[in-house]
Length: 411
Image 1 (cartoon, helix red, strand yellow):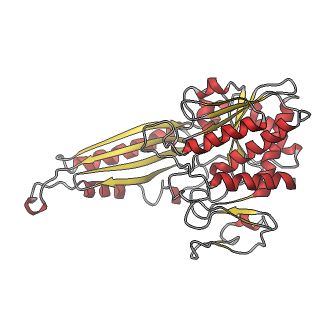
Image 2 (tube, one colour):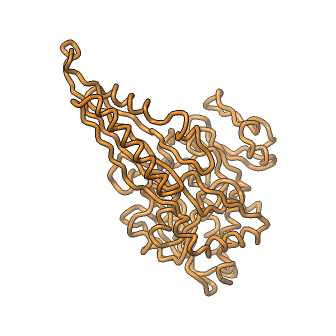
Image 3 (tube, rainbow, N blue to C red):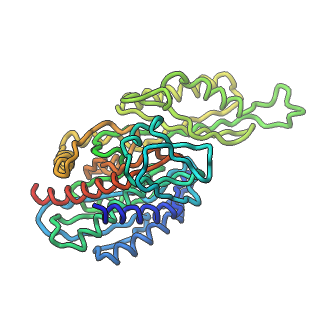
């Protein structure tokens, strides 16, 4: 376990220092060229450890095979290499806090920040663990470079030791998961797995078989532009109309900060433009299809109502499907979920299944025909400067990967 933990720390620190943020505004695939820096590194490392069929696809995914040592289904394991665009992820300086003492963790590059077990109770359970954080100015990127480190460490062990039982395994490291474009239409066929798992979850023991369903929305407001000195009765300010839309949307309910559990939300993520034209980006989330449709209808009605107050303006609302709750397909065949739960018990963990208030590549992959639950890595406080992870939690996730592989040969 100590050797595994040290390998995971080394890999995570090295991977997190590589800038690989995705960009939702980019039309390319992958959305940023810097993600390929991570992918080329993984190609080299996979080849060096003896993986077969190592490929960097035209859509930016890295695929590889770990040959089986026993009969069983072809099992896929996935993690994503991109980091979230919601917070600065350039110049990440990972640091390791050895043998965490249970107190406050401070940040050298931002002394105003403090990570405490009072505010984050799960941290209080990790006394004595080796904790990895960033330095205060960036996110860490454990989402999902922890998953990458876990799969690479487990793969190295299996390739180095043919006595470790496993069926044929397929690895996939995807780009652009954070912007909802991680599963290219070609990936299911290229992966060639009977079922798969993403390592992209949080607390130890979590085996997730239900996610949000998700849509994205873009609202475009075009006003009437004219010199402000001669604007009387003529100017239509798109900024004012955009503000009215935001103000009219639910505020006390149906926002991320006012919802929990199985409640969905409408979340404005970006506002850009000027007096002549504004663009609002929003995400819509719900666990059920009808709830998702209702929230989309609310957004459209708000846009229509604001448009009715100013007929000289043009307001359009375009809603695009992103992913759907994996439960809709997994509930028809819970084989991969049960296999993961039994494997967790094999390594002394009690599995916990709660709905994810988010999504994974597994959401799209499941919808496209490869059942793909999500498994824990240990990552916490993702998408912000207080992101952290326990190396010992990561080691348990790597053990779960090995346990699933072994148990699959007995299924």
